[in-house]
Image (cartoon, helix red, strand yellow):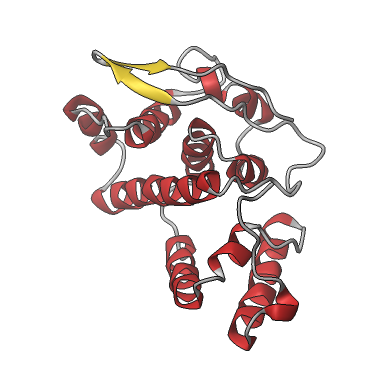
Length: 212
């Protein structure tokens, strides 16, 4: 249950109603379901912020250079680390649609040990973990490994995408926005619980919960 009510369409101003229709159309194209994600009506309490956020998200999605399955992996990893049910749901659906295997979705919480990931995938997931921890933990060694595999524009895209997923997930988790069933019928990635850094290693402070 969301901590605050979103702005219903019948009480929204004309600009917000247009945005609702555009979001439903875009999500229908992406997921096959013309649902309105619950963050949009919440953001509609500040129309100017909703408009700016929409423009920002459109820019993030435009003409990506990084392979779709890598983008799906890093977004989903960041979402489940932060306990965002909505992002876990739509992120799992998008990841599968973008070529991430179901085995990878199931094993995302143990990607370092799982045989279903290759080295480039593990490296971008290390980046997602490091950027989602507080404070950020991205070592020079990891960055050097990434630079050997991606050009500067691709690295900017990857880092930006993970940062954007942190924005989405933290916003949604703060308002306790629920999932709406985009990945209904398939297994979602496992929630991982809150994390912190102990010494040089990230430590899990919560009990992972598998959510279907």
